[in-house]
Each structure stands twice: as C-alpha cells, then as structure tokens.
Length: 471
Figure 1: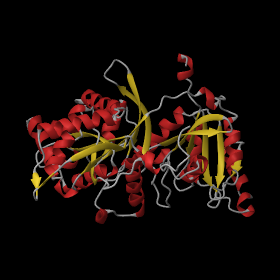
Figure 2: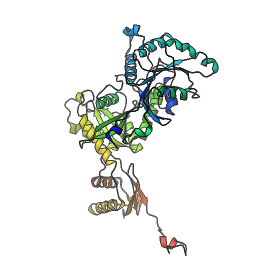
Figure 3: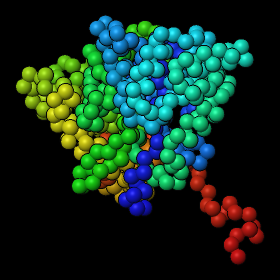
Figure 4: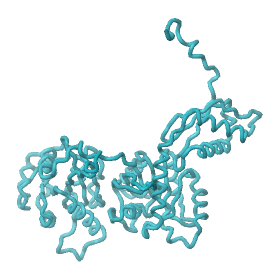
C-alpha cells in the first residue's frame, strides 16, 4: 500500500435547504438505511451527519445538514439553534465539491428557498436542485417552478419511492472527480461510542479530541440528536496513530423524562451505538457526589452489552481540590459493574489530560487483541485453586475439572465443576482477578459461567460405529 493510496479522499456532496423539505429523507434514501432521524418537527437535524457511499463502482461522501432557517436581512434575530445549525451547514457547504439544494414541490418556491439559493450561489460550486416530494405527475409539473432559482439542474425526486434519486446522484457525481472504490484504502477503524447522561460534556469531549468545533454544544439538555460518526486518529502511545470512528450520541435520560418522539429516536440510536461499538467511552461528571442513579443505569447498560469501556470523568476543573485517589475510589464504589474500566479525569473545556484518555483508549484497543488459550487458562486457574482453596459450602468443596473459552468479545469462560452451588460469589471474583492478572484485560469485561460437568463422558472411540474408524 503506497503513501499516495492512503491519502486519496472521496469527493463530497452536501445536502442543503430550508427546514422540512426532506433533506434527511433524501440522505437516508441514498445511504440505503435510516441513518439520520426524520420527523416533521422543524430543526431535528442539528449536527452534520455524513456517510461514505459506494455508487456504481465509485466512492463519495454524502453530508446531511440542518435546515437553514434565517434570512440574511433578519440576522439580528438569529437564535442560538439557528446560528449553530447555520454554522454546521456552512462548514459542510465549504468542504463539498457539489451541493444538492432540496426544495418542496408541494409547498412551492418560498422566499427562504430564494435566500438559501442566493447564499450557496456565492460559493461558486455546482448546484443540483432536488424538487422533492413529487409523489405524482401533478407535483412533477411544479418542479419547473424552481428554475427561478437560477440553477439549470432541476430533478424531481420522491424519497418514499426513491423516484428520481438515482438520476440525481449520478448527475451530481459527473461534476466530481471519479474515485473508484478500489482506490480508497482505509485501515480498519476502532468503533467508539461516546455515551452518558445529558450535559456531561460528550460533544465537548469529541470537539476537544478533534481540535475543532465539529459538534454543537450548549447547556441545554438534548442538544445532540443524531448519532454522529466522525473518523479520527488518536496517538497509540508508540509514536504512531490509531484510526478510530467516534460516534457521539444523545444523552441518555430516564424514560419518564423523554419529552417527544424525536428524543426517543435519539435514545434508541444511542443504545444501538453501544451494541455496535468495539469500545465505549462513558462520560460522567467528576466530583464527590456527582455520580447519579442515571449514571449507574448507563453503566449497567454498558456492562450488559459486554462492550469494552473507558471512563472519562469530565469537568475535573470544577472539583474543589479533590484528590484523584478519592475520586477513583468513588467511581469504583458507585459503578462496581465497570470496575474493569480504567478512568481518566479530564476537562474537555480546558482540554486537560486528554493525552491520558487517548493512552487508555489505545491500551484497551490493544487488549482487545489478547488471545486466551485453553492450556494457559487452565494452568492459571489450577494455580489459583492451589494457592487459595475455595471455601467449603454445605460440606462440599468446589472442585474444578477444567475450563474452556466459550466467547471472545467479551471473553466468556466456562468453569466445569463438581457442584455449581459450591461456587461462592467472592471466590469467583477472586478467580476473575487472577485471570486478569495473567492476561491483558484492562478495560475488557470478563464473564465466568459455572457449569456442572456431565456425569457421563463417553469415549469418542467407543461411540464410533464399527468399521468407520480411521484406516
């Protein structure tokens, strides 16, 4: 693989337009799955959402943006959300090779459409107009109305039935440099989900790691809605870099406090991101008494998913000279299910201690490659039983016959014993600790399953039918 091949970047197509014209629906239709949240509520999309697309042998990146909702002559009345969404859209438009301006055929041409067209015309880039929501020939006849925007490329589309979408994208790609799929060589990236309750600083942490304001942040709970994927690279601690895919997620609130269907979809995406992740960064507030019941529920969700984990204790700049040892002890006391997860005490706002977090992530990524062989595992456990014999329960001591590896991610070890009831919880915890001491499993969950050995184990030779053995 040459250095040149690694640096080939696919062209970028950005989808823009005013609110509620079907930008996210178009994005999902091209991607082929529901990646962006779609709802009739205005302002659902805030951060820009992107996806790499393979299209008829070539690669390109498609970006979905929030609705541009402010006319230039009303800039004095710009609210926080409009300003943030506008900034995100502007970044997407400036980075794009081609722009797709989405309009609503059923609503017709509006002053805001004209204003958005004027704004993107200043960028001097190829523009294709998607006259969307053309569900019938009647609405297709209205598509010509958008020629008043000054763009010659008008394409009637219907996202529900994928009408006109292939024609639109194929035409847009003709204005882009052709990059074949085979030319885009990417290293396998570590999939990292950034999760936590609202307002603990998840998006601020992602921005701090990236070194740019890639995501919108605010003190308002629910700022992040879509699960936003961002490709990035962190220091691997060995002088190189580790490719990762950060997935910023919506804050996980108590079910009873979910206000609307959009937030419900956001939470569903966050939970799905945990299930798909190789590693989860759980962000919480550092400080005495800062760990809440919701933090514990999120920790339990990570534990149940069997994902590897690193804890980012954020806002340590607000701790009143509390010692790290005290805060670490509080984490272990309040989140016993994540005792395997290393913690970094950081400040995303001040970009404090981020290298420590990157080092922990790289270490856990390396530990994910740890191989546990059956022979070594059984020797480790045999030594543990010899060094510290198990307690005798109801007059029957626990006896280990053998152990086997039943799963890899996460490691799941089956212990075949004489009597399951004799396996005390504290002794199993001791065995877990001994396994961890002999294998590199920091940040990796470990599951022990105790099973009774079958009473009869027939010989393979005896069970083989006569005359069917090896010749």
